[in-house]
Amino acid sequence: GLLVVHVGLAGLTFAGLLVGIPSGVALLRGERERRLLPLLLARPVRRREVVIGKFLGLALTLLLLWGGMVAGLMIMVELGTALTGFPLSRPILWQAALAAGLDLVLVAALAVFLSLRTQPTVAAALTLLLYLVGRSSGELLRWAESAPVAGIRVLFRGLFLFLPNFARLNWVDEAAHAIPIPFSVMAADFLYAILYLVVLIGGAMWVYEREQEDPSTDEG
Image (tube, rainbow, N blue to C red; front, side):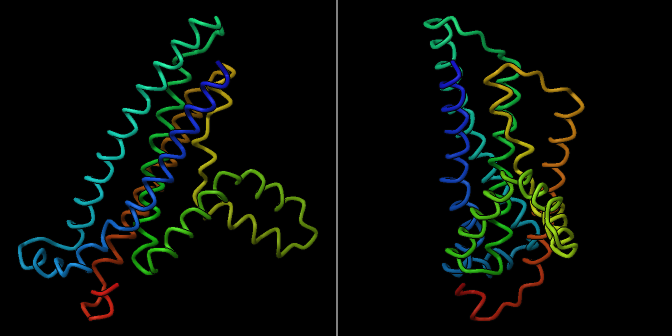
């Protein structure tokens, strides 16, 4: 039972990195490389509408992928429970799966934002790096508290506050060990992720609107 939960939720995370990052990085670059953006903007469509429309389409695609994987996970859990008799809390498992879905969309939003001012490979690498750092944000805070130099403590605390805290959406241990997640904690973590998502997409819209239509921008 524990193995099924860990492997299943880890699979959701891996899918987020494998699909969400490349899709997010490529989301707004296709129009430039295929010279389609001027055609889009020739119609009464604003740049911000291009960003939000394409991101919503990407988010829907990712959530459909997430839904299929969650369905497979739940089937595996039911089979594992029937064979081993290991008790699992399905409500907590659903909470962890929902957090993983939000994690998936947030990763894609981060990739979209970073892709606007960097090359695709750099944006993908930065997204992966920030994700790994965000999953270890608790360690970052502990380093901040134990650093001997005040300036380093301030730096690490600033990074902890500024960088996306993906650890808040990692509820694998709670799901595997049937540890209840208080509603206040779940609501706070979901609200944090949604607000960060809004900030990233809002930032992407702001940057995209202010891009200069020059050859270097169009060609990426």
